[in-house]
Length: 312
Image (cartoon, rainbow, N blue to C red; front, side, top):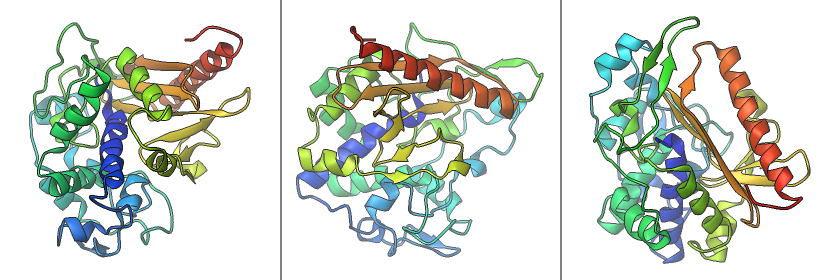
């Protein structure tokens, strides 16, 4: 299955490993690593830090709207094969003014993680894909997790995805990647529920990050209520915290795209983990919102129930 923005957790982990190795700092500016890349319409990479990219407090605009010119089944089929470089995606975003001054607010922007992928390459000489494979997939033996680049197909066996692009419309098969936004450090990866559970368990247990870097990853800010997140959600560095009805909360990072939604979650001690994946998405906002709330309720029930014995 595609895991969409759950990719961001892998990418953030690599960057934090580089911080632990002393190869860069969270307070480095984007311009220190990518001179002149973030410029235009009030955007300024000299004022944006790597921490702000990771935590979506940069204020940089999201490029996604620029690569979805036609939000319809026909538009999906027409544009799904189009590929862009990371530099092109950032250039799309730079055509728009920032949402706010860096560090003054929170707003989710995929552009942030495209830039993190570029910084990883600048710091290591290798692509973010190479570093994810070498630093996470191989050590954890995540043998069913793939970084496909611009290869648009899923390895078999796989789930099929279906998207309803308008309320009451037909369900379009969207299993083939939409490459304009399915091919970069913000959301390109393919995995399984078992592998995502293994990743998040290893992460919170400190198996792939040193204690200092894990503490930074888990240092959160509040996600504003008007951004569609569950009440009480807080955002770390590529890792989100969501409260549980039975007390405490869980760590994870959801991902979605045309026709799918993935919701991984693990308790703070890594003892219990669950990943829910859906493979059809409705066309009206009300139903889509209820779908997400139902998924969150299922995760809440599974993790709260596990406290009485057993592991989901």
